[in-house]
Length: 101
Image (cartoon, rainbow, N blue to C red):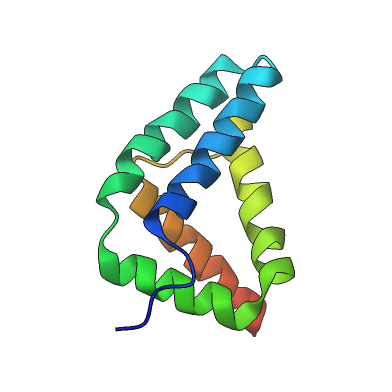
């Protein structure tokens, strides 16, 4: 099996990076929400991560970051919330599907 383009640790690091940014911006609630997703990202199913890797690889970094970064800011600002990192990832995949059309 080929190594996925996006590892679990890389995906988890995304939440940690944005949590640190929220901390720096003095947004403790945003930091909490992002750290909650960081913790739950340890339990994202492998097949979902594989799907994310394939999609990210096929669309390229500009398209992916154009969807991923605004969603993270929405979490930090409290305009959207997710109970689990898998929910976040499903929402990203849906949005990327719409971007492809």
